[in-house]
Image (cartoon, rainbow, N blue to C red; front, side, top):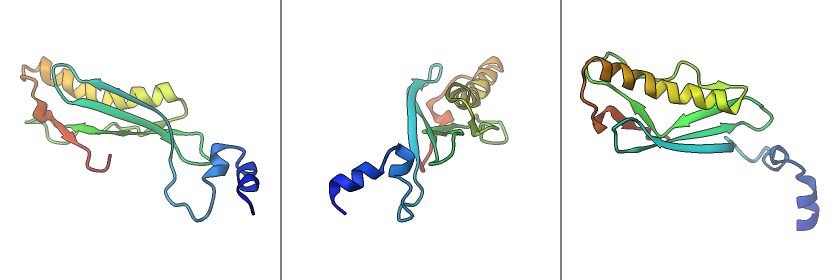
Amino acid sequence: MGRKEAIALAWTIDDAVSSKTLKDAKIYVQEVCFRLGHLAPKIRVRLFRYPGDKEIYFELSHFIKIPGQQDDHLPSLKSDSNVAYALNHAVEGLTHPYEYAVEQGNEPSDGWLIANQDF
């Protein structure tokens, strides 16, 4: 099969990555970056979907861990059927613990952000 014929078969992005030879394919929809409050590191949120799936998932470049709070704060939802809602889940998973910690009198620290080693 020539190059021209192979290209003609890939009508959609999903078709292009549907080969059984490919593993762990993700289709990135959007990436958003921002800083959280007074913290210096830029946080990135990648929004993606899996081939054949319309659900939008997200991955965070950083997690938030506030000293004195028991668990790392991970968003309870990891996806949504809508890009904006998926992004909102990711953002709230960071802003809610940050805002709560500041309201409790904690001084913001860059140490609250833990880099996601899998990002």
